Length: 77
Image (cartoon, rainbow, N blue to C red; front, side, top):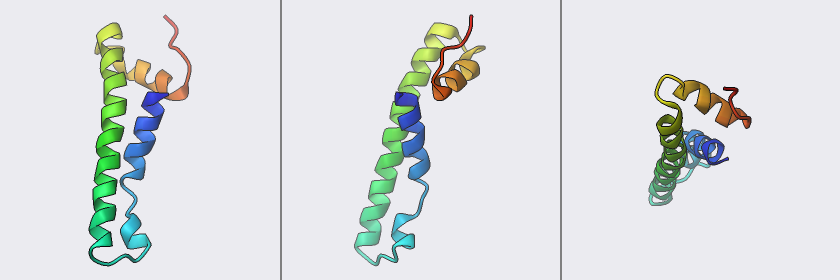
């Protein structure tokens, strides 16, 4: 679940909310700060889960473990 939330937060951080909403200074900078924070938090969440998966399964199986974690099922051994 943390992997999904992390990836969604990271993806949402790329949406230019301030530009879409037509915001001006200083609110444009505030939305940039929020977007950057969302991206960092998303990477921290997803990265911690991915790091734990790499420790248990090894680098060779890491992409499969991450994909199965994203889909919500456990990989077959």
